[in-house]
Image (tube, rainbow, N blue to C red; front, side, top):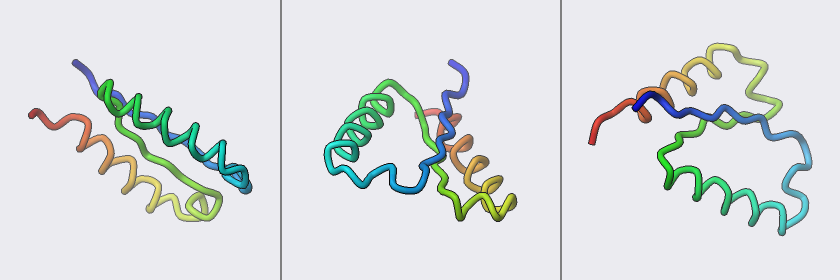
Length: 67
């Protein structure tokens, strides 16, 4: 199986609603159970391309490991 990586951007105020946060956590847990890995970013992260790259590389390494 190939790598299954989701890269997500969380905008400002996305989780102001507690229900939205619960839905997002549930969705992420379901996707992780299906073998997906996440690299999640917010606005401040995008100021540092090196940080983004390190997080994406680390997520790719996690999703390509064999059990």
